[in-house]
Length: 116
Image (cartoon, rainbow, N blue to C red; front, side):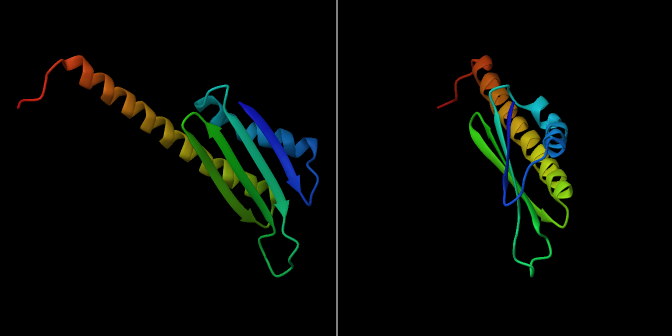
């Protein structure tokens, strides 16, 4: 899985980049090597917004685009929440694809034609 980490109005340190790779390793095991993950982190400049740090994650997999977005007071916490949500979405998407594939294959294997 290819991971792109971007920052808007903030710099992305090597430490944060390593943290992102570590947190999304679980998702990487569930998707193919061709999947592309984009992580965008930014800081809201408006002082009236309490949850300043926003992490938006987009995963491009075969047949779908999965997204997660979280805003908190801490940059790392926002990334962790987005990673957890994306892991749930990835598992659900993988299970749906597996169920569809199995239902198609069992329907063809029986060889029973519908009664007219």
